[in-house]
Image 1: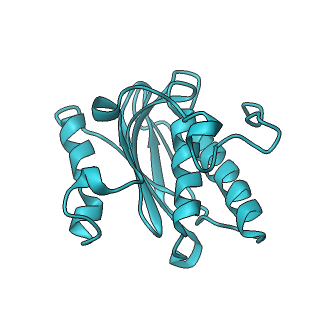
Image 2: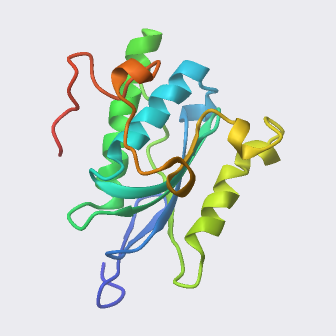
Length: 179
């Protein structure tokens, strides 16, 4: 449903706004707040990183034990919904393969919010990065292994399989086709 010249709204259980060229703050949770193993968090992080520069410009991502926060700008032909389907779908499949499990890993919907034009991306990214500190898991964000910030880490996408314990690539060494 259009709510402006360039803004559209959709709703399932949560409201979702889409506006081209804007930065989104997205949060999604594991199903029933299941606590992920360190290996599962690495898979989730690598799948998020793989999308950087491919479907979106990723500013920040933190994988908490039972939820994920991301800050990104979708590329022109991509929507938040399509990006999230890719990340959640591939990561769920890989996590299930690793755990020899079946079924949903993530809640169906994600919470997403468009940053206001006056909100500072780096400040919002720092807020996200401090989530593990606020949770008492580390003293400073840099100690948390499942955190990535583009302006601190660089613009590299998913680490190569030989440099990451778990790759976001499938077992045949290729990402699923873009859909």
